[in-house]
Length: 336
Image (cartoon, rainbow, N blue to C red; front, side, top):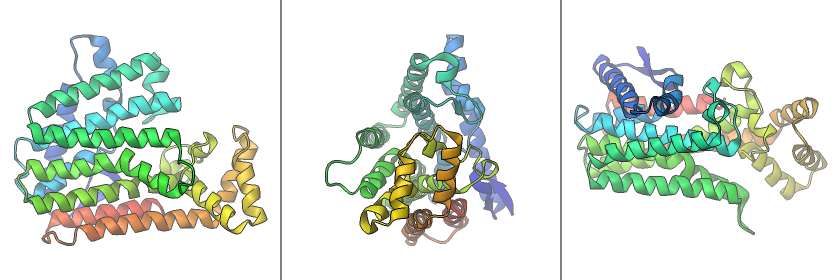
């Protein structure tokens, strides 16, 4: 048993491992090539997050999905470069919106060069992704355009918040389906599509990716509350301190509105206070860790991961399918 990709995914078949490792190495080369510019400063800014590393979760899914057709087909690696470039571009923009200081253990682009350069660098990456897409054909362009529309729509919905009368939890899950699920789904779709897999297989893997993407983000929500910095790689309660309403907080507010328990109402009031104060932040974090809302968020994560696993049922049994199933287990494990 060997290990590749994020979360220590184990691959039991040597041929599959070799294909995945070779594919990911080719993606890495493709990312560096796609982020080169005749202007040295643009190259430096565009390669800033590429060189900082990352899980390469989306390219990994492209490689695994391609196993259901011809994994050596010429469009597989370029499509993986496209989805990772798109993901990286959104990180540049997200860091500006969130005023983030650090990304992947290095200064964020907006901290290092300012908001304007960060936004324009994200745009540069989108442009390079589009150039690669143009060589993959009109269907690939259409698939990416629809996914990008969903991604941006999810971001706008998050910024706008739920409309009057809309369940905040349902709204949030819709946001995640757009912001995260759409691009993870496209990763699976591109891998299968570029490898020439049957259309039914393409559809199955797309549905799997959508659900896995949401589960992946929900696991991050749980980790932000439940983990220590060693486990998660970031400071616990970051979203909490910044007032970002992740699922554990939404489940708490839902429970407080439904039951009206004094301790729930008091915790909601604490969360609405200034959590830049370290003592108040630590109190809120400890209370949420002990609250049933966190366990409810874990159950939500498990539900989406189980839906992703169930979506794979029609596929033939093979090592690639086993690896995709193991990714569902890994996401659940991250959420505890």
